[in-house]
Image (cartoon, rainbow, N blue to C red):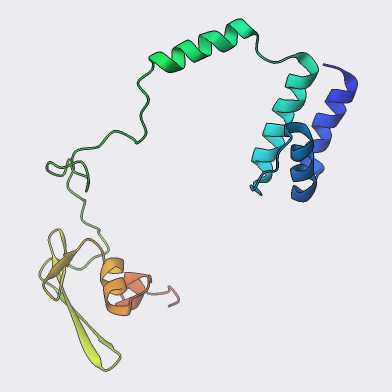
Length: 162
């Protein structure tokens, strides 16, 4: 690798994103919208090396095109049974959290002038006729925003600030 290429590659990580984007436009002849510094550094390093040492041979390009034509390309990951889009039954039951009170316990919490009551089930929590997988999911249903279910229902162990 030529010395000036080595120096230029070593300089890339020290440049700011604006400078990297400018260099990208010079090397590729088009602008980029990304601000991801790590990606820009890798892409620029590849381009500098390809320009200095040569790109893929025409034979390698043809072979890559053949492989791409033969491959069955997937546009989305395979469906997993038990997921929302995979159908079927759940593959593994969710383990019960040891921090929850025993099944059958009724958790009560005053909130904005009402009383929130949640029954702890063996696998989930029952709130207003709906079974939720976690206390945080119940707290989100009650408040409308994400928060810690243990903090919301004041189930934190002693000594933990709330």
